[in-house]
Image (tube, rainbow, N blue to C red; front, side, top):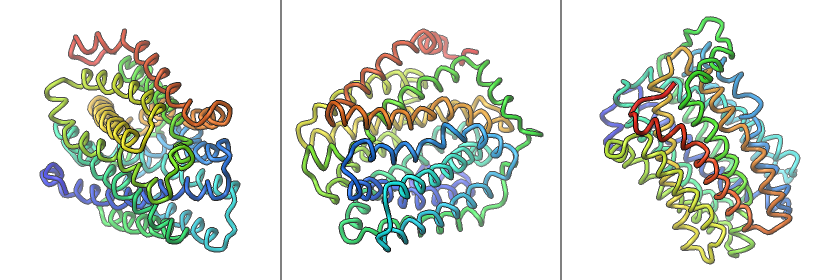
Length: 400
């Protein structure tokens, strides 16, 4: 555990461990899922369809999840969601073992897992201010990001690629076990964060975000960025295996490149924000990432690709930590689930469309084309948001 986490409350530390274990399994799954998909099809459109199914619940269910999070005990919702994901991944592993898996079944299971993620992630962000004082939120979110990154991007993908190379069922079985262990840890925590929003009407969160100019702008900016990210990365497995001619094990190692940068970002974000300020750190991270995406499209070898992914991981983590902390600091706890739901709908709802667009672009124009397109879109979105971000940066306050 990081020194940051050790200074935070005991309940938070249990959440930190649950996050780390869950994300290790997710990292294994993240590498194994596209590798399984390319054994079933080499068509970029069908590979992208799996990503579409994974993120489509953010478009369809974000508002519903926000209302549920503000009505229910958030810890209970989290461990029950994890238990459901263990069952879903167990079914996937059984189908793989029986040689009964196809793209349609994979798409349905990916959608089911994505549905659980919508509820879990919203609850996890909403419960954190109930566990941690406001002045420690940057530290808590940074520590959570490190735990998530180490498991999801650094340790998990290489392990997932290795296990997949040994036997296709192994990475999915390990992911199911990680869900069970994380659910057990959360189930032992006392109930916290029961919503205090009465009927928890979705429109209350929509009205609140509509009146908050900075957070509304950040949500829309996130929408363009996540659309662009999925447009680029939906067919990354084909870029690595077909263009750079790497095997399953090496694919996981390439994914770990982004993790190195993400871990560094999680460790230094608190100091970086203290030096630059919230919004200046955001502007720098967004500008750098736009350039990096263009560069990925022109990567000529694995070291170059890995280095660019590491830089992208670093600045993406800075963005994530700062924007989550800003929401947690400014949104009332009783509304946080619903505001998160609206924010995620705007910010993540376009991800399935981005994945679909990326698959079509890669199929029509080549596997490298989506990356510069994504970088240009990110740069254009940042320029459009500057009239809101720069006054907020100069004023040092959150504009409404």
